Amino acid sequence: MLVPTCTALIVAAGRGSRFGGPLPKQYALLNGQPVLRHTILACQAAPAISAIRVVIAQGDEAHYAAATRDLDLARPVLGGLSRQQSVLNGLEALTEVPPDFVAVHDAARPFVRPQDIAACLTAVAETGVDGAVLGIPLADTVKRTDPEGCVVETVPRVRLWRAQTPQVFRFATLLAAHRAAAPLAEAEATALTDDAAVAEKAGLKIVMVAGSEDNRKVTTAEDLARASIMETRTALGFDVHGFAAGNAVMLCGVAVPHSQTLAGHSDADVALHALTDAVLGTIGAGDIGKHFPPSDPQWRGVSSDRFLRRAVELLDARGGRIVQLDLTLVCEAPRIGPHREAMIASVAGIAGISPDRVSVKATTTEGLGFTGRREGIAAQAIATVEIPRS
Ligand code: MG
Image (cartoon, rainbow, N blue to C red):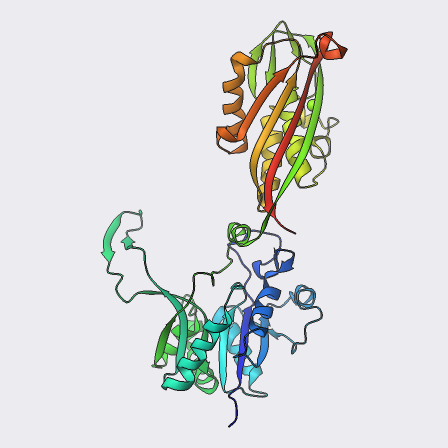
């Protein structure tokens, strides 16, 4: 008996407008490899899949080549302006050697399980339906709102599903449905967002197959971070500022009354500078002087919370998060204790973390050295972060 053929048509032509990174989401790195490569490898590992074809966006050829290096794949198909158009282009390309079945799959679902692909194929091949769609029965209560976000009604969730991919169809049937729907797509405000919708329009019979929450879509940088194996990194920051004539020093964004002030180009907040360098250190992003050169007049007198905020933004952009910030201030005076809680609250607010993740300590040098001679204040900081493993 001939084993039926099933081609995985992986749709990687989206521009990922919700992702916000420099790359479309399917080429972003998940544990050191592009998301698309993980998805291709998952399909290759599924015995139900006999061939793989990827649809990519025009202009992404170099990203695709890098993501698929060393993999034995047919040349990619160029997509269209909508997902529907991209799938149609992919199906048309498969007509060269038509498979019995096609499993249309999102490039951004790298965690698809072989048994779920097999279950969809079995449903179509053995039960006489036209298509099978992997999905999850809704567990949450569903509300419909008006444009202002006020609840209009509770939608009964009985028999409601969230559709995932793969969506498996008899190849010839899906091709015919897509060809029939193509002229309509141009007339509609938005093209159909999945293949089941195209098949529904054609009146085809589609069955839902219960899948796994593991098969989630990586749509945002946050999804990517959540999907990644995280590693812990720790880095040090150190800074010194000398005293000058004045009546308060800025420490951790808090103005502490003192017989002198700290001299510096910005507000000379030695504590925030050390913390900024520590956070930058965790992502190897250089130091505060690289990002905010003292030679640049725009940083004159500026409040140093700007610097720490920027370092945290850079960490955020990498999908990282701060686990702890630990600071030690070294000075004979002013006394830090009375201001400690305000400093912790201030740092937590600037870094966007809970105060229990911030530690502020103080010590003297027993009258020794420049801090002992009350010439200035030194600060040491250690930042501990979690960041997706690269
Ligand atoms: Mg400094």
